[in-house]
Length: 586
Ligand code: ASP
Image (tube, rainbow, N blue to C red):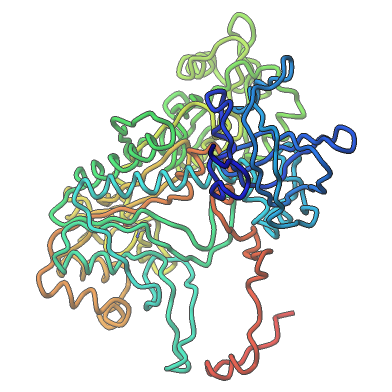
């Protein structure tokens, strides 16, 4: 007869959450943490044993002092639960493990918060004891989802002949435009490395180096204020390809995104629609439109071309229709007007569509009949709708209505599926600085649109601002996932752009001389892209906050409550680095 006692079996024969009625009669050995317990008198306890796969109920006889989160090994026999005690909410709810021998592998202090998810816990406490938090179902699910997504992305890139190359973490500053994290150089006191904001320059060097197709799940560091969708350090799928056009890059990345979505949900993304930056701004007032819902911005400038109403004598008038919101109260409308003003509007005009189609509004008396019917027609207004109108410079109108649209209509992150969108034809410059020099919208190596090259020679600011670039963003459900561009690989075009940006040849040489030097030795045309894995996984996991898909994130104030980072250095360590700290600013 085989010995099926505790000592004869392997440490673990099965996973708790994977046992089922098919295992009835088997002697199994399970390891995990003690979840909920119900004592029945002194000598019988029902213990929910938990491992990474889930829970199974163990019926333990005899006096064992088993407490929450003790780590135990149980050897027992799988059996059907008695009639009437089957738990349909548990994957293992049909069975239990009886006739148990129990070994305590580790005792545990009472956990700082229950591992049971039903109890909400303050985030700082969760992060301080992240090792306990990680045991919870939500974090287990999210981190495993993340691992599947990473692996699918790697596979997708490799299927397309991309080579994974690791670029250095200690570098000279990259021109991505955010603040660098810096690391003092012990061997060269007074000098610093920067941590990479992205591998941008290195991936371009890889192209000059004949790698042809590069990718990396790259750790990027940017010293920017943290938000729900931003951490100091984040991971991007970073990619670059030689002899590739914008269309090629979009296809490569679409394949990777589709693989990620499939790994997470089982569905694929066959095609990602494109929208120009201009159309996105005009229709949604944003360069990262959330197209899961309507309420698009509707052009009304023409309707008021000859208006006598001063507030609408503006370069641009647009409106949005909030379906069925005519019952919005006066107080709510006042609050909405304040919000619009906070977003930069001079004012907000509201109108309610009555039964029969009449428009009621405090400003209706200043508008002509054709104007009122023009509004109703353009906005396709129906009885019961609320209409919101803003008049101002075109940029301001788009901005304010774009934000109001989100405020009034945006569905929660996990509703409406995943609406991916490529935004293309971004402007090359996002504005002019005080000296009239254009400010790059992406980075200084972005190739201008071929049709707009001639405008680079113009002296007019408007012409420069009209130059489109060969850059593109990937957006999903109103989140910017990432961006990329076709790069400038020709010295003459690069010099022209540096000239426009007010970067002298000397400055260019100091900042990115090594890239410019490399380009002198035969640079292939190349293009690339990077998108944030944290954001993508958060969306796929239905989480609003990327911290929920990162094992050890920082809080909003950049601190790590678990390790207490950042911490001061010992005086000896500072001395070795040739550093002295100033007292904190008052
Ligand atoms: N380096 C850019 C970024 O991190 C992406 C790219 O242009 O490839 O946003």
